[in-house]
Figure 1 (cartoon, helix red, strand yellow):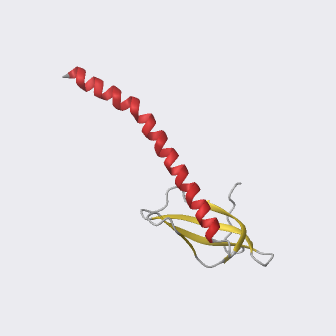
Figure 2 (cartoon, helix red, strand yellow):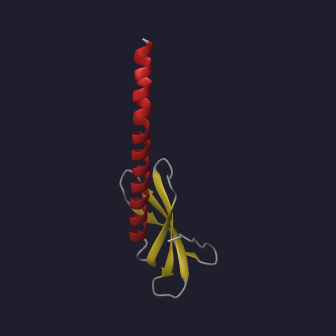
Figure 3 (cartoon, rainbow, N blue to C red):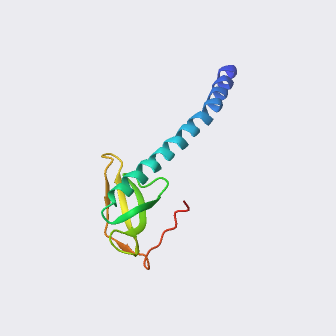
Length: 107
């Protein structure tokens, strides 16, 4: 019985790094998906937008702030984006002026 328990513990511990790695990969893929969807959704407001993505979002939504130059203007703006995890659709809120909210994405 102890041998089975020891074997089970070894198998679980060997498999744990692979599960953790795939989880990290899945979260990275999620962030990329939110980034692309939110930047695309903001194209009517923001030229060459850059997104700062919440690493995990909420239970139902991916969350991001998209910032960049306002379309047709020389000012920098930001917009809040929500990404529905089920439908994979992003929606953008209204523009927020750069003096009220400025996000540095580090890119």
